[in-house]
Length: 178
Image 1 (cartoon, rainbow, N blue to C red):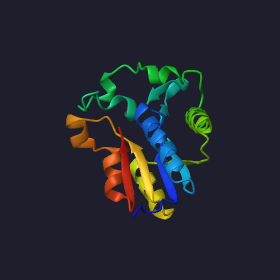
Image 2 (image 1 turned 180 degrees about the vertical axis):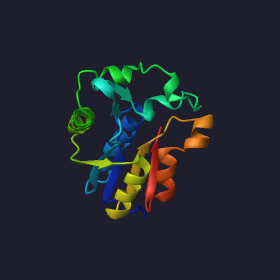
Image 3 (image 1 turned 90 degrees about the horizontal axis):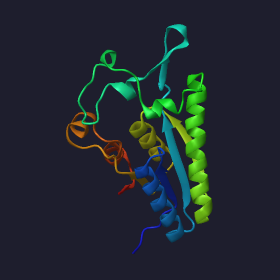
C-alpha cells in the first residue's frame, strides 16, 4: 500500500544539487497531485562585515575553510572571489541578502511554472539544517527533499552536511537528490 503524501518540502539554496531536489519535488507533486509543495530557502545574515571606510570584507563563510575543508586564517587571505564580485555594487547587507533571495525565488518560480506545479516559497533565517528541520517538524511534512551536499573527506567529518543533519532531525521521510 502506498502512503499518502500531502506535504512535500524542498530545501533550495540555488545550487546544482538543490536544483535536482527541486526537480524531484516537481515529479513527486505530479505523482501525488493533492500534495502541497513548499520550497524553503535559508539565509544567514552575516554575508558581509562592514569595516572602516565602507570597505566590505567577506564573512567567515568565504574565508575560513579551503575547498578541501582545511582551516585558512581569514587574516592571511585576500578576499577575491567570483561570489563576492556579483555583489560589488550592493551597498548593504540587507540589499545583498534581498538580491540573493530574489534570484533564488525567481529561479524556483520559473522552473515550477514551466512544470505546471503550484508551490509556496518560504524564506527562513539561520543555520540551514536547523531551520529546515524546525520547519519540517512544525508543518507536518510527509517528505523532505534536499540536494546532496557535495562535501567529502575532512570537510564532511568536521563540518557535517546539511542533508545528513536534516535526515537525523526530521520526523518524516527524507529524499536526498543526486
